[in-house]
Length: 142
Ligand code: 5GP
Image: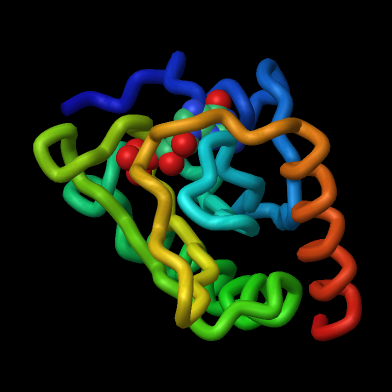
């Protein structure tokens, strides 16, 4: 599949669509998933163009993983979670909906099931509050 510049995450990267940002550097961006499967569900994307794991340049993937590795413990602490699930889907048949490579950082709690994938839009206030919690924890943890 060819990369489509009109995909939603490309538009977010260009600032054409808003997002609840938690982190940005020269190579990556992290923001709240609009239909979270768990409170604090965060997406991490590269600024480099790639559809998924099947076409991403290895160096771009390493840059992306550096940010996933940095944010995973921050999200866990910020959300007071018991664990963190990292997910990544490749092609529609495997559950991919947005065709710009991304990793999901999902807080997990012992007693809570994940909500269904792509089920319900979260209130903007809740997304903003969780983004703020994660940004504050990132400030604290570095
Ligand atoms: P995947 O492609 O890995 O199946 O999932 C894409 C993810 O992006 C889904 O979890 C979905 O909730 C999220 N998503 C879809 N559209 C938007 C959007 O416009 N903004 C944000 N922040 N997340 C989105």
